[in-house]
Length: 487
Image (cartoon, rainbow, N blue to C red; front, side, top):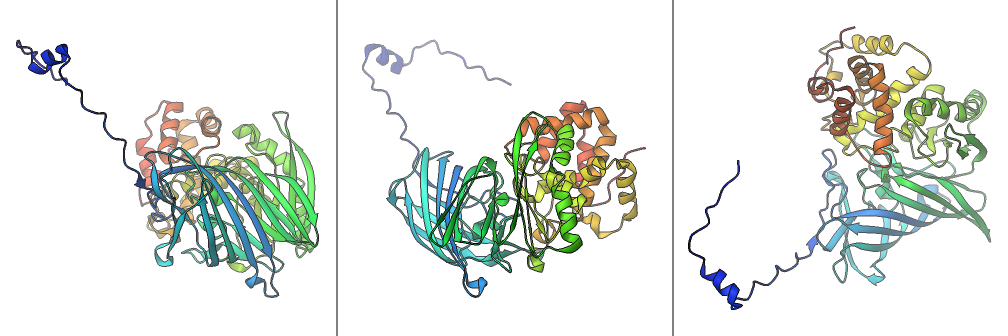
């Protein structure tokens, strides 16, 4: 409803004065005062992780790793150069996530000038902040450089698994889903803030270094070797990976469906032997086949290289992970897991979640559903059977995929198995044509970004023309067994 205003018959005195040039207009409002950047990214599951007030464009990491006789005491010396832009008011202070462990920050500069800084650590509440106060407030583009050194730590999740900087038998492996990247370098630790990377790692000769993207350079100097990896595509901090070890390195070229050729770099621990090694090498020989099959369903491969790291790791790191361009596998690779992690290069890496508690099932569910489809199995029967096997009163239905409230439950039944059931139920609900159009449109539209449930529902409704609110409520938001679509 609009409001009509009646113009008075008498001209106000101020108007007469303006005509006579007798009134001075009020001064323009003063510019907004600088603010302290929020020390949260607003994630529902990790409310004290991630930061606000800026958007990172690029991380340039320069790391030097030196082993000790006890590898658990090996040291890391790092320089993290973070190029960012403010997203609102000027910042008189801002924060980065940095779980220091045995490392100490030695200096911080902002745009080349020394800055004040303080560490705030509360492990119980999962809060690890490096708070930076520059000499002058920053507005627009700015660059912060953090130098640090010491013994890096790992982050133990609520479910007992370990991420972050983990020591292995012959080096270290840096794996970071969901929040472990803050143990290796200061960053904005949220999948909503993706950036490009260069990762330089200096190690003793005899060690190999695997990381994301493309190996741009490797130089020997004295008794050490310097490696440079570059990731030119946007990448979430949780997908950053560094693995240092005495690997066997496999290289090849993979022809893609769009005419491009991308390199493969895979790193296999020599301790992987026997049947495990034979199966691992067989799977690594399938890169072109698997990627081409996925391109047929999802559209062009979104990465700049392919590859894997297969490492013997401690028991609490015994999980595969879709680190961007170069997935990680503990001790061996099987065919189902190989396709699962390859699918993540689209679902989870190219298009990442926005909120850990609300969106993880989107990507884990698709990566769990896809091996069944590519194997030519009956996806409807497979996932109907999985749905039917779990009775309605089972506690596995009590954690809704789109409303996880305990991080110990994050990587549970609702993300993988129920997530795959969700995708099959959606296929049956909207039909094959709209379903596969949705998969390709999602990747084409949101490539390089971060999107979750709200965008998925909106796009599914737009593609199909159906109102899917009841479906998403039943399958994603409700804490009970959803109804299977009529067959």
